[in-house]
Length: 285
Image 1 (tube, helix red, strand yellow):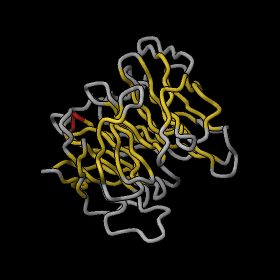
Image 2 (cartoon, rainbow, N blue to C red):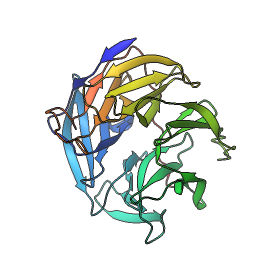
Image 3 (cartoon, rainbow, N blue to C red):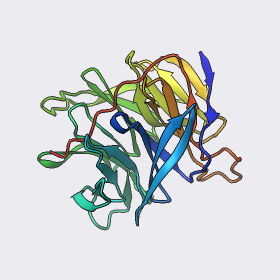
Image 4 (cartoon, rainbow, N blue to C red):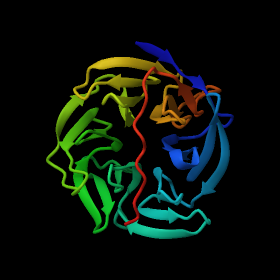
């Protein structure tokens, strides 16, 4: 099955990433990683209307909302709480000082814990992390990744992307206790690079493909079910949004393109005949 997404934002983002739907406030959140900005917007007939922007002094890899409207923001090495009143509080340091890495994609588990991964900013390989913030502080689920990326929960399993080897990992995950089992390979994407990811109500994964300009819907074992074309080669992530969770919002990037087209870096939307899962709220514990 093939779908076509349409450009949905007036603005172009250098490295748009991490769309998140905040149902309580009917707002969309996303980031521009290299610009160090967190954006807010609303959906209007398939368009994303930007309503607010929060600037940071470092890269911003991911954002998530709490039930009361505060945001948790993954800066380069730390997690910051951005209050609805504009206040900013450092919550935790994830990466050690001096490490040439930055935080990347993140998401909230079904119990409200925030998970975030990292990528190297030098030539190191196999030393990146997938970390979790909970009531005990920072716990590392993985410490040997190449480029930690998209996260999604389907039933009692956590799926996670390691972009450069093209691997989608899976592990048993007890949201009540936080116990995570050993990871195993779910499948490998052999064309393009798997990036951000979300899950739908049928239990399938929607994975942005950096390099192929599309989002791919795959079963948890990797069978390709549908393709959503964007026309923007650097398609970076996706999330279901809207009151009925039936609008797929897709981020793209103009970053690292020699000659970006006019719609590279815009947000896109598509209707794909399926609904997403509600986005859990971050629990500050």
